[in-house]
Every structure is written in C-alpha cells, then in structure tokens.
Amino acid sequence: MPESIPFDLDVYLRRIGWEGERRADAATLRGVHLAHMRAIPFENLDALRGMAPSLDPADLMAKLVHSRRGGYCYEHNTLFACALEALGFRVTLLAARVVVGADSIASRPRTHMALLAEVPGEPRPYLADVGFGAIGALLEPVPLVADVEFAGAGRRHRLVHAPHDGPLEMWLLQAHDPGKGDWSSQYAFTLEPFEKPDYDVINWHIATNPRSPFSQRLYVQHLSAARHLLLDGRLLTRTGSDGTVTEREVTREPEVRRLLEKEFGITAPEEMTLP
Image 1: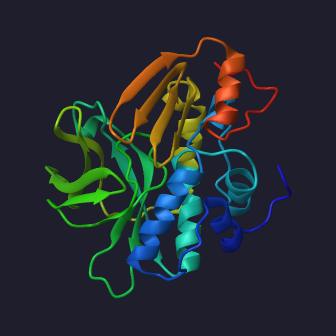
Image 2: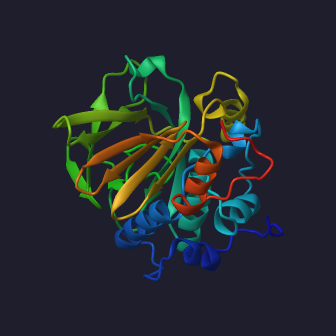
C-alpha cells in the first residue's frame, strides 16, 4: 500500500467518481452515497487472515482509496463519515442489529455500523449506510421518518418502528423483496450515539472471533447500475437490474482470484489462501 496520508476529500471524490456539487444538501448526500456504493467493493479479506482492519482515516485512505481493495461496514462507514463531515454534514455513528434471517431482533448483537447525517436546514436527519453487504442495502440515504416508502436507484426501502421494551425508540430498516412481493427486515437500531472506541472493540470481535461469519468464509460484493454481484464462499450470485438472478459455483482458487480482480476490482494478497 502507498504511504499513509490523512483523509483527503479531493482524492476520495476522485476515487468514487463524484464530479457534482460539494454542498451539504440532500442532493449531494444522495449522489455521493450512491457513487461510493458503486465504486468501492465490500470485502472481508483482512478478517479471513485473522486481522482486524484499522479504522484510522489514514489507513482507510491507503486501503480503500489508493489500493485495489474494499472493506466491510466499519471501514466503509468510517471513511464515508469523514467525507460527509468534510462536506459540512453533521454525522452521528449508530450501532445496529442485523436481523436478516433472525427469529427476533433481540437474538442479534449490535455489530453493524450505520450513520445518521444531518442536512442543514432540513427538519429530519437521514439514515446513511454505504457498508451493508447485502442485496437489501441502501443505495441512497433515506430520511428518518416512519412508514413512508422511498425509492432510490432502483431499490425500495422504508423505516418502521419495532416493538421494544427499552427507553429508546427502535427503528427497523426494511427492503422490498421483488421476488416475494413483500418487505424484508434488514437491521434494527436506536438513535443512541456510539463513539470510535466502541467500534474498535466491535471491529476486533467481528474480525477475529472464530465464530464470526466474516472470519470463516469469503464474502465480497460489487455494485453497478446494471447488476449486483456477490461472492459468498464459492457461490457467485449475479442479480441484474431487472431482478434476474443467476448463480454458479466457483470451484478453483485461481478462478476466485480472477473474479476478484476483474469483476470486483480487488487485488487479493498473493500470500493469502482463499477459502
């Protein structure tokens, strides 16, 4: 990797291909969010090597901006928070419980990082999240308002209130599943602010705990206007913008490396064995 440098907004915006306005308004927030999603891949190569990736902005610039690498939620959203603050937004860090496939909200720990971005002059903040490695991820941020459907870059989302016994209101992000014609819950969160030391602990746990899914199998995704591409272990899933889904098994490590390089824009470390 190149020598570490502090966060640089100009270099970051070139990395994601953003040539629009640099104002703290809703249009810029949506545009930069979508550009980041389509430019920087989601991947867990460091966790597979037993390493907790650094969340220092200089290290994130070196890895996600200057190198052919991506990262997972803590890396993406820490980097994105730096960009939003440099653009003039006020950002609050949130911790969410991923509930995809869960029986209940309480059965999952708070392991996902999301952001709350305040737009000057607007009454409600926006939920922003460029680090959720799933087909139900937000492509554009959504205002923090319940029971309203939002369509952004071809995906439909809504926020609802979830039953909760605690003192803080529980919000639930849901994505519309066109295959099922129904809403699918993605993650739940309160508006309690979290700080960098909280994520240092969570990041280390998720990257190094042998029971963490991110330390056990390869998980990478890349998004473009035409398709969503996911490699989960050795299963490659391509979801077209029209909802068409194709799957195939990738059986050999050399082919995995070629896919990472050509399709995902990731150069895996040469010394790493890909599971």
